Length: 247
Ligand code: APR
Image (tube, rainbow, N blue to C red; front, side, top):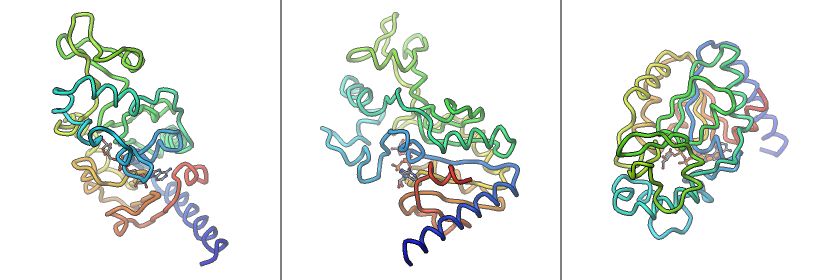
């Protein structure tokens, strides 16, 4: 197909996405790190992603419960450098989703991201399956600390009581929050349209939640192929911020 032909096909798909959204009234969005790359936050598995950069240990090892316990200082060196992007701003994808919620079209965002950009864009119902960098708690007394405190601290961040402060982020080997899980499953199972975007659908149990969808339209917007492409009624391979600018 020519470039012109490709463009026409892409425009046709975005037009169809817009029609689907207009038809539906309980849309749910399920997203991952690819939603935030256009805000300057690297994803994990794209070629330029976090998991393809040089570190003393594989990032999936660093972002684990065992590593946090045994190499806390090394964990925080990686975490401050790679996971705390506090200057990042919401992009067109975050903004469109917040607008669709305000219009009463979208009932929930279910995200694997921990950057808080959906809430910053104005989304109110956001299920953060993997937690958030904006919530950090002392492991001894439970005191709350914000992300800025962690970014500006040196070495292992300590509470005034002396306890170690830990981000409210689901590390490998840790379970997901049951209340968040319940809310996400509830929203997806009631949805008449599920838009999946910016995720490789490689990590469970998060990726398995999309199996609770039984509504009318399943849309998948992703740069790279995913294992679920064959299930989508509408598959758009491209930049999600650009696609959402078009609807
Ligand atoms: N538009 C659309 N898709 C994009 C964009 C973009 N601008 N940028 C990247 N992508 C796609 C990539 O093609 C990739 O398939 O987003 C996907 C991101 O996949 P991952 O990097 O695997 O991120 P994610 O799916 O969120 O990972 C899930 O893995 O390590 C854990 O806890 C971490 O929550 C994360 C989980």
